[in-house]
Length: 228
Ligand SMILES: [Fe+2]
Ligand SMILES: [Fe+2]
Picture 1: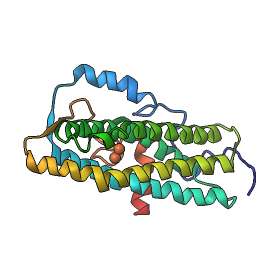
Picture 2 (picture 1 turned 45 degrees about the vertical axis):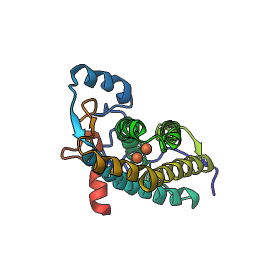
Picture 3 (picture 1 turned 30 degrees about the vertical axis):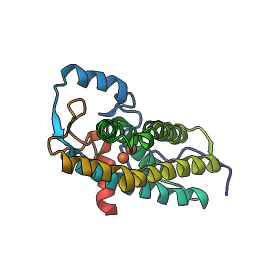
Picture 4 (picture 1 turned 120 degrees about the vertical axis):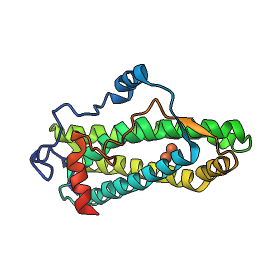
């Protein structure tokens, strides 16, 4: 395995990739746009079972992206050239949707569960630290990829290790939620049909998998359509 990864050809598999341009959902979105949204936000309660269906759909999408990341990881270990722009697009999505929308929405669901189920409450204490940890690992990986794209050398070992840490942590977290936490929320939704989550704080659309794909994710969507 060679020691150093250098910047790839920027006109690679994703010509016109947004790096260097201003994306629709900027890296600063979790803070800046959150405030922008909150200024005009009105309360919008959505039934818990519908929110859970959306969160499960998110998990299906996230697993697909994690599989793609992992398939690029194989190129890192065999001295091949990973598709850095694809990896960057995926990590951009992870930052602006998974970290900024999916996880905060789950936190609201878990807050509701905590109010109704004292037994599960202790294990829910682990959720927010895990969401934070996933965001930190994601930022580390994204920084690696951005450094490579901008021409800074990053070792293959480091990139591979950071990618594996991220994929493993998020996969394990999703499995835990699906196996243990969401079923508790399902029970609450079944017992209390009126239970709802105020999603007014969040944007309506998933910027990649929603009805309208943000400009900055069109290359990734095209890739996914060919991949599936
Ligand atoms: Fe989560
Ligand atoms: Fe989740």
